[in-house]
Image 1: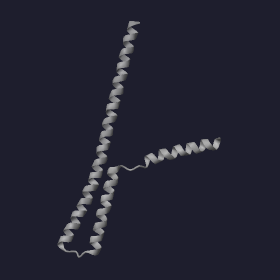
Image 2 (image 1 turned 180 degrees about the horizontal axis):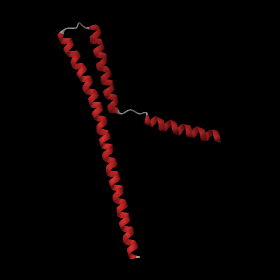
Image 3 (image 1 turned 90 degrees about the vertical axis):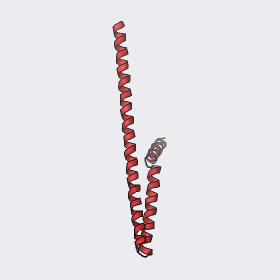
Image 4 (image 1 turned 120 degrees about the vertical axis):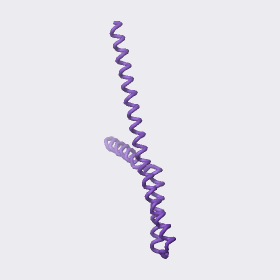
Length: 112
C-alpha cells in the first residue's frame, strides 16, 4: 500500500516536471533556423572558394542569424509584457472586488 502511494507521488511529480520541460514553438522554429543557417555557413566556409559573392552571401546569412536571435528576444519581451499586463489587471480586478465587498459590508452594517 505504501509502495503504491510513493509510486503515485513519483508519477505525479514526473508529469509536473514534464510539463515544465516543453519548449515554446517559436523558440524551436528559430533555433532550428539558426542551426540550419550555421550549417550552411560552415559548408560555405569549408567547401566553397571565397570570392566576393560568397563572402557577401556569408555576411547575409550572418545577419539573418542575428535577426532571428533578436526576433527571439523580442518574442520573450512581448510575452513578459503581456504577463505583466495580465498581472496588473488581475490585481486591479481583485482590488475592485475587495472594495466593492467592503462597501457592501459597510452598507449592511449601517442598516443593521
